[in-house]
Image (cartoon, rainbow, N blue to C red; front, side, top):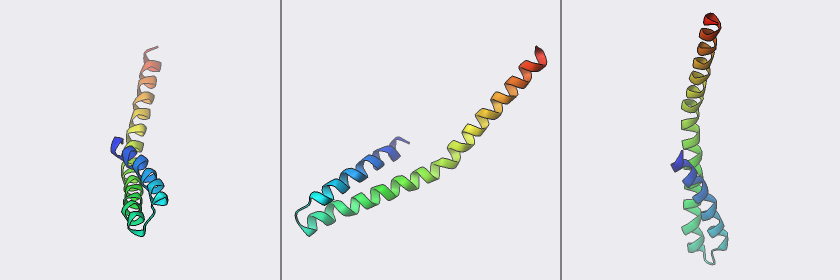
Length: 74
């Protein structure tokens, strides 16, 4: 998650530098990393999302089990 966040912040920063470039070579120097960083952050987010969703679902099921066990005891 931290890597994804760093890439997401660095992507727009590189894009900002892209629009401030004075030469075509400078624009290419900042434009390519901006695009790659934003795409990579999106890919990491999409790759991690199912695992995060599964963990959230497992926590909810454990909570339901605990509530059911408490109801049976009390």
